[in-house]
Structure formats: C-alpha cells, structure tokens
Image 1 (cartoon, rainbow, N blue to C red):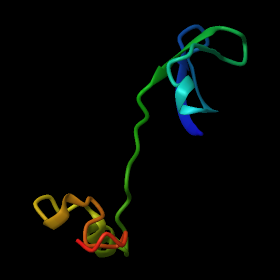
Image 2 (image 1 turned 90 degrees about the vertical axis):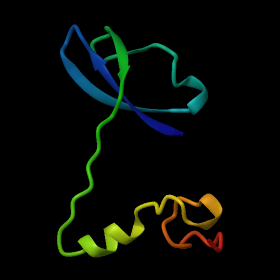
Image 3 (image 1 turned 90 degrees about the horizontal axis):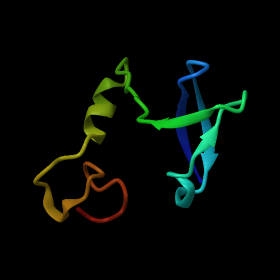
Image 4 (image 1 turned 180 degrees about the horizontal axis):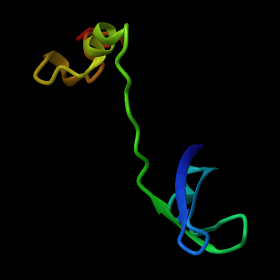
Amino acid sequence: MAIYEYYCPTCRDTFERRRPMSEATTATQCASGHRAERTISNFAVARGEGGAAVAQMEPEFGAGGGCACGGGGCGCSS
C-alpha cells in the first residue's frame, strides 16, 4: 500500500488516501463526493543537530555498485 495525495478543485482541499499501487491512477472522490485529482507530493528534509548524519546518508553517485544507500548501510557491500 502507498499513500497518495489528492486535490479536490471544487472544495479546494488536499487529502491523502492509502491505496494499492495498482490503483494509483484510478479516479477517487473527496469526502464531499467530488472528483479529486492525484497530485505530486512535496517533502522536505530538515537538518538540525544531526545534519552531518543526514548528509552522510545522501546517495554518493559514482560510488561502486550503483547503490543509492550512500555508504553500504543497506548491506549491499558497496
């Protein structure tokens, strides 16, 4: 299951819905019954005291194995 974000242009409301990935493009309705459109979700990463740890986890492009774990944390040995 994935969480998708939808926007209802009639209500001007944004909401989330858990759905199987196979239903990602299936139309859905808001709580009022209007047709809602799937949107692209925005996200952010905050860097506070642990900023150095977060920076180390970013992908190291060009690192051996093509792994995006940023240092072998996933056990892929790259």
